Image (cartoon, rainbow over all chains, first blue to last red; front, side, top):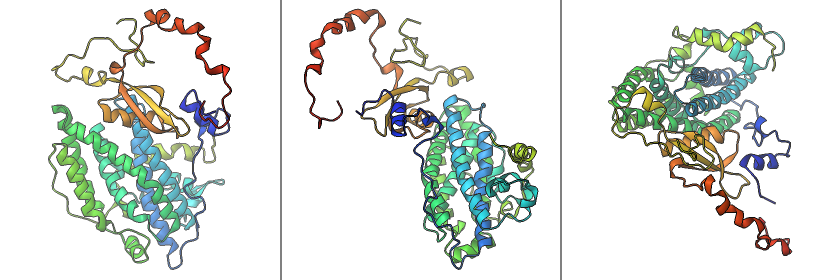
Length: 303
Length: 123
């Protein structure tokens, strides 16, 4: 019999009939069967530092997105934004765990008490100057238009990187990228749809969308200059040179912004990313205080 | 509002007055006047789309996005339909008896007097 009253019944049926599909069923472990040995000829310290960069971008942007919980303009959109954040959190968790297996914990480990997983130690017990995310991720979310423009820029850039990283020599990074590509494709699509509607909407939404584009655009200056770590890893077939995806990212963003009837600002000159060197704006510390407060107060808390 | 209006509907048709056209968008009428959509999802093992709920969205495309985010975030679906609630024509509760009562005693319309061969699926 394949007659199900609702899709939820079907799910329940497919997963043992215990009525607990809501707690998560049918999920695949993205790292199942993946060899976690660091490939020969790859410096684990470099690989760990690289995973930290990509992981911190996701973790910090996720935290910014979750700030919309209970504040989004519509209930449906709140769930959409939270879903994007959760996707990024999943990527961050895998990347920080990979960084942990590469031995990046160092002095952060001293902050931790009890047995805390590597990814938690990295997320909750590093201070702002130890974070390696771009300023694009930490910048204040602004209004809804700015959140969507930032999500568009961040997901377009990250999708371009991840598309290439699927063929990296590190099997773990490759699996994380393969999992991330459909997620980021959806984020980019969702953000682009909103930017189109806001830009080509009412006079007020157009004004706000233009202000958002103008506010976010300068941050792309940081995205295209490889760090020393990235340069070495590019030679080892592990990392993607961010300069190699710059034109692709710029073309996509330009197309969306033009179609949204907005004025495309001048593309800023590339500069080395201060965030990748641990230099952050004043906006990161309060974000981390919210992110880390509970874990630091109760380091071994479970629920 | 008439009797058949059902916000968050389960098949009933909103019959309230239309949004006045040409009105200047204000905070009030840009927020709450997104149309109501009914959402249908086909599960992995389901044969047909099943009504799962309703939501508000600014237009059809965003309604599909919102439905994906609200109703399929736990792996429930492989296909989504959305339709504006106002485009559904529903039977009226007032007509319940003439519509459905006559079928109540027609036992011969049920195929219960036949043996269904084992290799006939989906029955």
